[in-house]
Length: 173
Image (cartoon, helix red, strand yellow):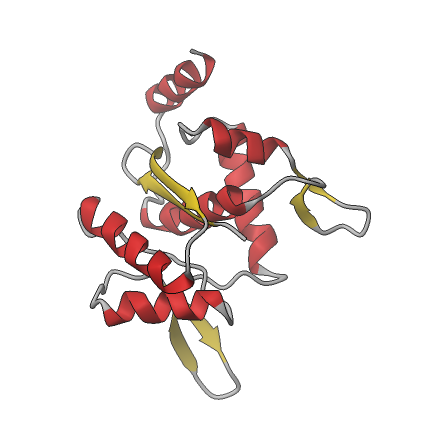
């Protein structure tokens, strides 16, 4: 499996960096912290699911990085804040749909040809599940979508028409 990270500039809604490759889960935590530090202590939103995600998150915390996305989890008696993004049957469609709508409406700028290729191969299968076509990958799509979904809450202000026009021109050229 691959690991992927996508960095969004919240103010301009532009993809400013991408990392993709094979790496051990703890070393991926190192990569994420370096990216976060390079981009002005950026908010990290790593996928925190059992297995590699837990190892990556533990490494980020071990390194003392503190600007990490926290999600709310409601249980019977309390609300807890948990580190990282959790992809599940509820969060994945929400994240993918908000990301796809932003791309469709030119509300973001994607600067990676590889990410665009992965986006083109992302589809629904016969059972209604979304993912990459046979023989393709979705690591960049998931990283970009998670980053976008988290960052849109940070910058919830609407994009003005001049910004949209600039984004359309960048996609066309």
